[in-house]
Amino acid sequence: MFDNIKEDIQTIFDRDPAARSAVETLIASAGLHAILFHRMNHWLWNKKLYLPARIGSHLARFLTGVEIHPGAKIGKRFFIDHGMGVVIGETAEIADDCSIYHGVTLGGTSWNKGKRHPTLEKGVIIGAGAVILGPITLGADSKIGSNAVVVKDVPAGATVVGIPGRVVSTRLGADKQDKEIQRHAMAKKIGFDAYGTTPDMPDPIQNALDSMLDHMHKVDLELEELKKKINQK
Image (cartoon, rainbow, N blue to C red):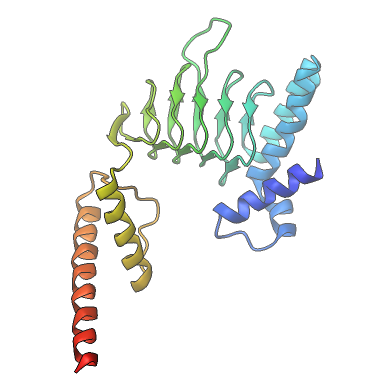
C-alpha cells in the first residue's frame, strides 16, 4: 500500500510543476486524495461491500470535488490535476499512465446495464472540461483537447478537438518527428515552451511560432557553419 502511495506522489511530481514537497502533495492535492479514496472504495466494491463503497465515494466527492464510482477500474500512475468537477462512471476503465484535468466527464449514454462508459488505454491525456461519452475506446497515447465532446473511438496517438470531437492529427511520421525534435530543442534554447500545445494543431498563432522556430533553427545552423569556417582560418 505504501509503495502505491509513494508511486502516486511521484507521479504528481513528474507531471505537476507546482508540486514542491511530498508532505505538501500528500496534504493538499485533491487529485491524489480522490485516487487514494478510490483505491479503498474499489477494494470494498470488489468484496461486494457495495453500500460502504458508495458511501466512501460520496464522502470523497464531498471532500475533493472528484466523483469516481467505486466500480471504475483505474491503473497505476493515474494523475488528476486540480480535480474539481471530474466525474468517472462505474464501467470506466483507465489504463496506466493516464492524465486528466478538471471538469472531465467519463460518462455513459445508456440506462442499460453492462459496459456503458469509456475505456482509456495507456498514456491518454484528457484536457480540462472534455466530455467522453459511451463505451468507446481512446487509443494509447491519444490526446483530447479541452472542452471536446468525444462519442466515437479515437485511434492510438491521435489528437482530438472540438464539438463533436474530430481527429486533427495522428502519430507523426519520421520526417515530422525530426522537425518536432528540432522545434523543441530551439524552444528550449531560447527559453520558450508552448504549454499544452500539440503538433499540427489548427491554430494560426502556433503555426506562426512553429515557422519562427524552423527559421531560427536554420539560422542557427548557418551561424555554426560560419563559426567553423572562421576558426579554420
